[in-house]
Image (cartoon, rainbow over all chains, first blue to last red; front, side):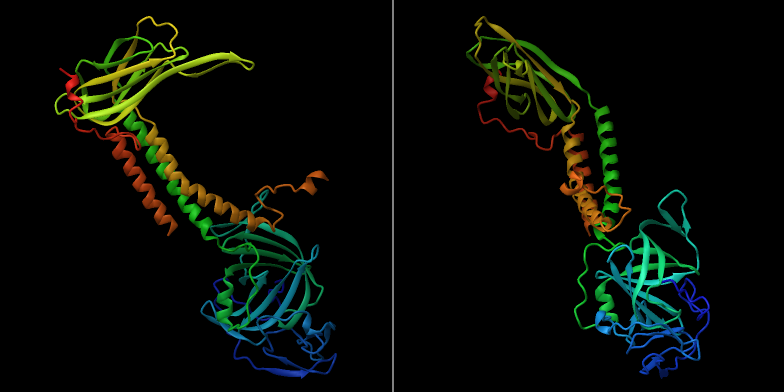
Length: 453
Length: 45
């Protein structure tokens, strides 16, 4: 977009308002100096060059002799603009006429894109840039953004833009009229910075430096604005500054996720601090190994606090043997019971890999939300695999209101599933966006051929 | 839309966490006792 209009017509300022109206357009015709065909100039006085529709010679219209700037004999079939020159359309609440068409390409690759020059006599020039199905509405700006030294960022106002591409662009094809002397083969150094849905572009040639700002526009908006009836090119990949709803969702969800983590963590710490962690009852009971025993009933004990959990811990002298308890916690007042089963088992030995063990000599269970009151336990026990059949004993401990962690970790999981999914989707989108950039913040996965070379 | 659904979901989870943990109930733990059916009380003489 080099050719800001320096020396040409007055361009609008950054706000898009005209500095001064350029008046009602008057069409002017003359004969092409190269081929003699009739050339129409839609905006004499505003345009500095026009391309002959017949022979594609670029003519300097500021010269009375209509000097040929460049001769370009390629036929128009090489490129056909999807928006015909002269088409008018309403975009951003203003009517624009397409007066010029340029194809530019990256000097070091075959990558090319199209640029449509729009004109409104009261608001000046704008550009529509079509890059592999992605459209941008572009305006030049007079304000020079700050390129942050030592970084790959540029700042314009409050917004920061990250460098996306840097290279040399060459004009490979032109049609229509322009506000500067466009020449096929002319080159500019260009750098694009992005902050979706905007893109900041820097272009520099031998004469001038131009900054412009682009805003992503959906292809259907362009089609509606200019009444394009033929199918628009399918958008390939993710455009450099294409807004990604999933990325915006991630930004919001990330904040709320952190809020929920903070709430859950603070609540867990506070609730843990209020736990009694008290021993309500503890006693030893005899049992005979490898036999069943029933009808064991404990003394009545008191459970404090309105509603809290109860942890029952069994410790048994198991060694390559098991000890089973089936029982219930019974409310001594109303008979409400909380049944449970628990096994204590411990096995160990040695094999070719050395010592191994599984299980433990104690195990516990948690009963949820038990109201305060007087309780006792009914227990049936059974054991097996004991080699020493000497009568033994197990220890029973009842703890009241112990600190729980299961709820905390479960809730962390529940509030993290959706953020994790959105993050993965967002990352996938951003990786796709940056796949066409030399400045991708996402490390590329080496391919087999590249890793072997 | 996704943000609103997530916010509502998160608030629900936090509320359930506070409600359950404050009364000593695990999400998937046994939370209710059952009335004796005639077998439990006779153990205690």
